[in-house]
Image (cartoon, rainbow, N blue to C red; front, top):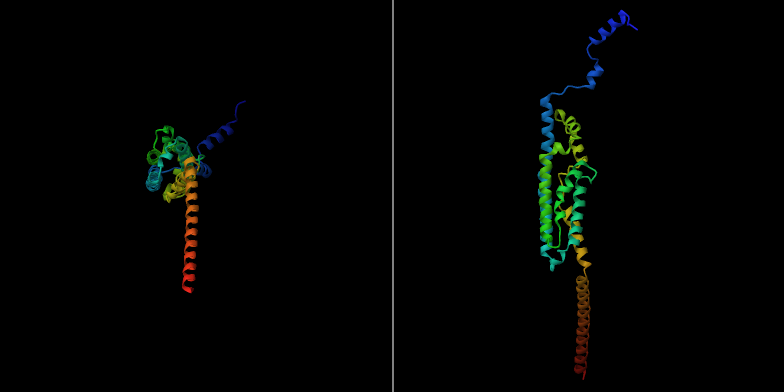
Length: 245
């Protein structure tokens, strides 16, 4: 059915009309330079955070290596079972730091940060593993800094929109996506790992035997002290009797 001439005229008139305000609001035009500044702000903030976090993690693992080496009979830690337990705890600490494995940053970064665990065997020295984990964390976070946009490709447009015109609204979103806190405390890594190492050492048969021997020595020392005290009391009484006579 052919359209009436008046309908054709109305259609042409509508096509020649400028877009309504509603359409313009849905399709805002961004200044390309503004987009560049927004992306720079995101990168600068991430770099600022990681420059604090990277050395803190490496320092924590150096401290853990030093603690192990300072222990008597530290060869007991050169055990694949302990090394895997320690590595798992380190992985858990790193996952916690990055918002657990559900965040995109943690999902991507955890395999890089804990790669040394794939090489643990009976010949691995525990202090070497700790240092390797610290170095892997440093290198992994450096990779994140250099490849942030690809790691957060799905969320990048949202972050950039939040960073326009100098806004800092992108910062909390970055942390929700797994960026660590700038005030990361190395003790949150070392303290649980030292506690785990001490607990592991206490379960070993030779450590239990040594603890029993030490307890026995304490009992013997107590008995000797009591006998010495009784001897002194006896001598004092005898001297008193001699003086009276």
